[in-house]
Amino acid sequence: MKHSHLPTFTVKPGSKVNLALHDTASTEGVKDKDAAEKQVKRNVQRLAELQEVLYAENKRSVLLVLQGLDTAGKDGTIRHVMTGLNPMGVDIISFKKPTEQELDHDYLWRIHKACPARGDITVFNRSHYEDVLVVRVLNLIGVAECRRRFEQINNFERMLTDNGTTIIKCFLHISKAEQRERLEERLHDPLKNWKFQPEDLEVRKHWNAYMGRGRAYEQMLSATSTEAAPWHIIPADRKWFRNIAVSSLLVSTLEGMRLKMPKPVKDWAKVKVE
Image (spheres, rainbow, N blue to C red):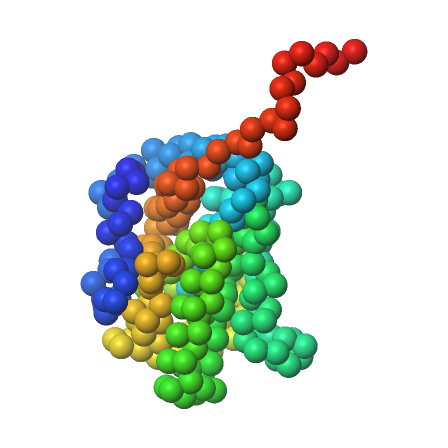
């Protein structure tokens, strides 16, 4: 898949998202799964090269945000796309239910301290967007507060980008039917049974509140896709295409940063190692 295909997934800032227009099973014409998996391997190799320069340059950082409903493939994306990178320069942060300490601070407190240091790549498995999704669906905050949070998040992300962090936000878009299949697989596969949680079924009962027309996810994607940090809607019913889409997006983004190895502090040409 060519990188030029990716902008078709990007949410144009200021636009209104209609998820029904985005095919969760789209493969952008890529039909050969084996060829796609080979491309993912090439992308991962290229990503490792780019990460080394990012780490050595030590001036900028990258934040990959993976957001999606249960079974959308956040863990799988991390496992397939981030493999092969130097663990020294990569952090994977999984945001779960806030602790008592976190609840004693503003909702962005735990997010900000987890953001990448210069030279690093950080992946958020779920993110600050839970605080405009779950809490809104459960009516823990109202419409006005949700809108305030959209503005606060946009300002927060602008501050991060102004200080050298490139933000890549991916919404992993799966269908309700595909989610059912994946939940059933968790139930019946002994190797995946441990991943099943009763809460998964409770969240599924709220599918329309999350995914319905004009509801939580569409509101979030429309309100928080900005020039500084646009959203990318990734068709995620086909795991192999999800992987090629996210890995290609990462590669094209890092290549666009025009990273450069730092110059030596002195001329080492005449130095001999005895």
